[in-house]
Image 1 (spheres, helix red, strand yellow):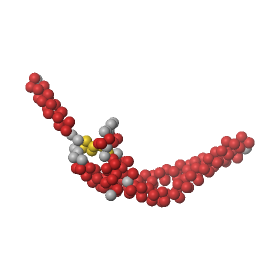
Image 2 (image 1 turned 90 degrees about the vertical axis):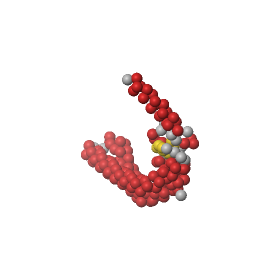
Image 3 (image 1 turned 120 degrees about the vertical axis):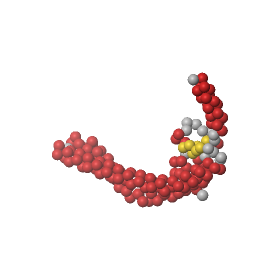
Image 4 (image 1 turned 60 degrees about the vertical axis):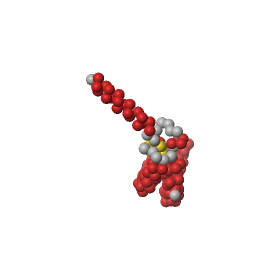
Amino acid sequence: MFRNILLIVAVMALAVPAAAETRVGVVDLRQALFSSDNAKSFSEVMQKDFAGDEEKVRETQEEARKLKERLEKDGAMMNESERNQLAGEFQEKVKEFNFLKQRLDSTVNKRKQAFLEEARPEVDAAVKELLEENDLDLILPSEAVVYVKPEMNLTAQLLEKLNR
């Protein structure tokens, strides 16, 4: 029993200096990637590609809003049949809006995911370069870190590497 305790203490004593020598860097991968020149170009293309769809979603939303306002404003003066018809039009417009918005969001998310997958090898290579250039043992994503000294935050360096 006593030997086991001595062994544990000896292992812990050896582990503490090793941990103290470990050099760790931190990067905000998402910030670096989405601030890169490639991401900015991608964003411009996305805006052009989906401008028409976004406009259709906005128009449908505005039409639904107008129907709702009309129903709230004039509904009390309408007979039941007219009120039911207007309420039905409003519900149909809301369904159309939800469908269009969901379809647009899904398509945009798929394109973003494809961009991330395409950029992954470049990001991995840049992170590996950072690891070697800064003589680090480990690079952690910023989401996993509570606090980091500013000099160990390598996000700006990663962005530079992605932009070259």
